[in-house]
Image (cartoon, rainbow, N blue to C red; front, side, top):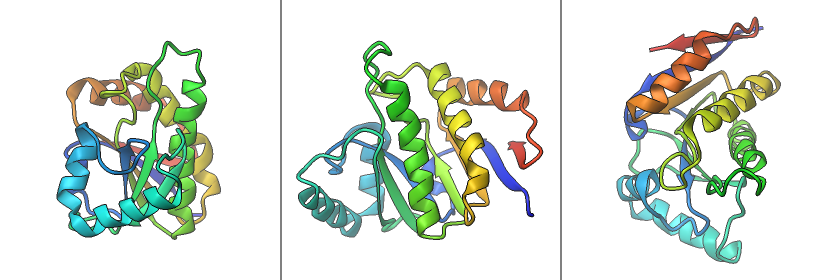
Amino acid sequence: MAFKKITLIQNDITKLEVDVLVNSANKSLLGGGGLDYIIHKKAGVEMQQECRRIHDEIGGSLPNGQAVVTMAGNLSAKYLIHTVGPRWLGGSKNEAEELCNAYLNSLVKANEIKAKSISFPNISTGVYNYPKLKAAEIAIGTVLSSLPSFEHIEQVYFVCYDQENYNIYKSILSNLDDPKIQINIV
């Protein structure tokens, strides 16, 4: 069995050449603030039209933790997976479960389209105010525990735009040793 790989990098996620780029989307799928805005702007009108079609099909709102696939438009990735992370409301409103589901459902969708590589941003840690350490623990824990069960996905990238998230992920990943997963910190 080939090793699965997790790589941590600090970069602009929209510039990565991967099969799947995960977008931390808002419920409408029509573009919001932060990374969602940037992805919608860079991906272009065809991807935006696909999001509009899905928006209309689902009645205008994708629940927290769910994910949908679209083309990547003008981005280097082959596909976009739009997932809705939770807003931080103090930790007692199922935020942890919803954030876990955002990562897990993105992996499920990526595997369904036979993606070999997937890149994740730091979901919900921007305008949704999820505490960065808690979010990183959920992201890493979810990916580590589920990655071996996905037959097609070989490479997961955690892409941190800011230094604080990068340092948190680096601290956690540096202390992990999994015989089934190779961990790279760039």
